[in-house]
Length: 331
Image 1 (spheres, rainbow, N blue to C red):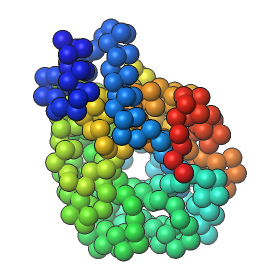
Image 2: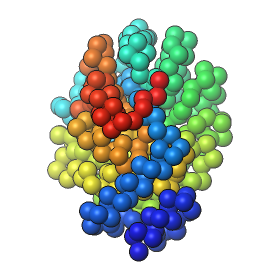
Image 3: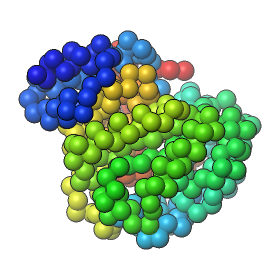
Image 4: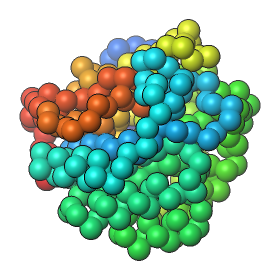
């Protein structure tokens, strides 16, 4: 049965809910290898150039209350994360993005905590687009007004990210008690309505079921401007309420990446190096991902703590992995 489903997916026919669920339930190594090979082939048939995305974290001073139970990004949430509060000055942002551009990385993500109605994103977009030729993604979650989105559009922001993380309403409310799922959905709709490419992804390993993941991926098809799906595996941050929750396995991450590629042949699939683990980047590429995020140049001018894990991918190491696999880098 599994091989027939994979064969159907390779022809880019839509799979139904039950077929997708069967793929998530794969247990045998030979079936997983076949799934990953199919996703790899589908990705390469459309695009065998791998994009790299660096990052600038704008602020960790978050107004969401109570805090997300897994967050190690916001100030005072984890000693392993950005424990001390910061709000980067314009010169710090400019120095960081100039360093990214000089390194040859073509894209930067500017992300920050909630509470500024998108001001922090608009300010970063202005700096990036007026001073570099970098592609730009901004991610401040649901902290965006229509006015801010119009400003982001004016500055030619390429992509705006608002991750739903999970569409299981009760699970979302449990792990993100200070936010509402409907607010994030509405933000995704607002981004699409402005004609800006939408990035919206899954945080897996929170306690969701396979059916939840299937429902989530099918739900994303409703957004007409969807251009990117991040697949993020949960990793516990010390000192947080979820510090003893088990991390998402590499198996579940590559399986989800591969299934997402078969469902979305033309969509960019992003894997942040902190959540997959820098040493496991190659498996995400073999599974069909085509964008590696949180890639940091050697001479980056400030300290970086990865979102979802304090680690991150070093540019030289990530480039080496891409070349080892015989893939091309997008310049």
